[in-house]
Image (cartoon, rainbow, N blue to C red; front, side):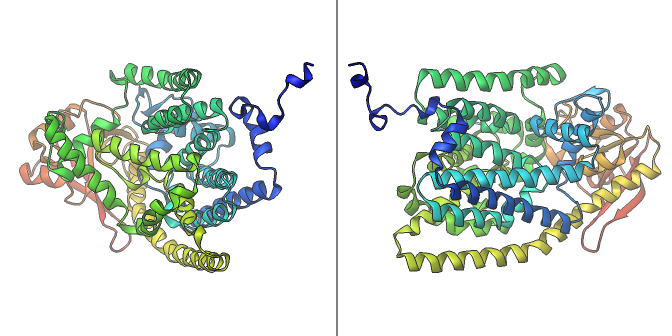
Length: 510
C-alpha cells in the first residue's frame, strides 16, 4: 500500500535545486559529447589566449600592474599594500590579488606570466561553462558554434590576457549563471566570490532572487554575499575610513571633468531631474562602447538579440538582464564606463543571437555557421598584430619604471598617475596623484585637470616627493610648469618606439 503512494519520478516535484551540482551536471548532460565539446572549446579558448600573450611578449595593461604590485607584496608577507608598510585598499578586485599572490607564493613564477596564464585558463573555463549551459538549454549546435566564435573573438581574448580581473570575472559569473536554476548554494557562493572580483557583480543577487523567489534562497544569497563582502568592507574602513575602497572616488575626481565637464562635487549635488538627464548621457556612452574599436564586431550579435530571445530559456537570458542592470548601475553611480566592465557578459550574447537563425533550414544554418567561423578566424588573425602594437606602446611605461629602478636612489619617492607599470618596475615609494590608494590627495584633484598648481606643488613637497613622473608636457607636469616654471626640472626623457610617446622624469624643486 505504501509503495502505491509513491509517485513515479517523472510526476514528482523537481528537486534539482537541492541536489549537489556535480549530480546535476551528470543528470542533465547525459550525452558525453556535451561535456567533451565543452572541454574542447575551453582548451581552444585557453590556447588562443596564450598564443596572443606569447606574441605580445608578456606586456599587459598598465592598470594590471597595480594588481601585480599588491600581489607581490602580499606573497612576500608584506600584507595588502601598494607601498610596503602602508596597508591600503587601492584595488577593485581583492580576489584577483589573492589568486595572483597565492600562485606566486606557490610557484615563485613571474607575475606577468601568472596573470596571463591564469587569465587564459579562466577564459577557457568560462567558455566551457557557457557552452555546457547553452547545450543543456537544448541548443547544442548553437552552443558549439557560439563557443568557437567566442574563443576566436579578439575583444574577449585581449581582455582575458590583459592582466586584469576580467577572465576571473567571466568564470565566476558564468558559474553563477549556470547554477541559477540548478544549484542554489553554488549560485550563491559564486555570487559572493564574484562580488570580491568586482563590486558591481552585486547585480547578480536580484537576478538570482527573480529566478529563485524563495525565502531560503534569499537567506542563502544574503549570507554568502555578507560573508564575502564583510571582511573586505571592514578592511577598507580600517585603512581608509570608508567601507568602500577609495578607487571609485579617485577615478571620479580625475576623470569626470574630462569626460563630462563636471566635478565630483557637482555630480553628487545634481537634483533628481538633472541626475536622470545625466544618467541618460551615461547610458548613451555605454551604447557607444559597442561601436568603437574591436567592439564593433559585437554589433551584429546585438542586433539579432531580440529575435533569439524567444528560443532560449531563462538561464541563458539571465546575462542579458545582468548587462542591462549593470549599465544602469554604472550610469547612476559610476559613469566612467569601459568595455572591460561588461566583457564578462558579452560572450553570452552570441548564443542568444545565434538562436535567432534556428528557423532557417538545416542546410542554410550550416552554410551560415561556416561563414561565421571563417569570419572570426579572419578577425582574430588581423587583431593579433594590432594587439601586439598596442601593448608595445604600453611598454614605454615599463621602460620608464626600469630606468627609474637603475637611476634613482632606493628611497626616492615618485609622484605620478597612472601608477601601474612605473610603480611595479621601479620598486620605489609611490605618491599616487590619482587618489586610488590614499585619500589625502583628493582635495588637490577635486577639480580634475583644472587643479591649482600651487596646491599640487605644496602637496608634492608635503609628501616629500623627489620626482614627478608624467608624459612630456603631460597633464600634471605641463600645467605645473606653465604656472610655476621653477617648480620642476626635467631630469630625463624615456622614449618608447616611434609614435608611442615619451615619459618625462621631473625633479621636484624644494
